[in-house]
Amino acid sequence: MENGGSVRQVEQELTREMSSGFNWMPEMVTALLDYSCHHNKYPTINDFNPQIVKVMNKYLDNEQKRLDKALK
Image (cartoon, rainbow, N blue to C red):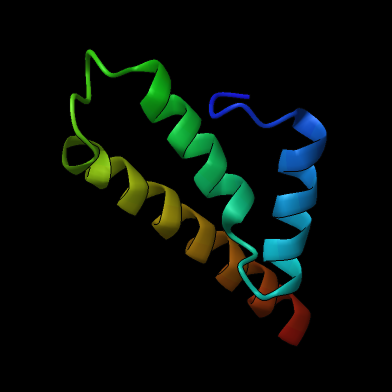
């Protein structure tokens, strides 16, 4: 992939991170791939930070909905 890792290596790392409680990692990886493909729009990671916040807020909203549904 972008940093020289294979798809299999990325899958293994995501699985490891998620098993450690970082369940939002797939969303973050997707967001960072978007960042790496759009450096013309986001020259620095600081320029991309609002997108990261949106991704995390969406993840948290979805998790809250799942919790609410489970508690009904």
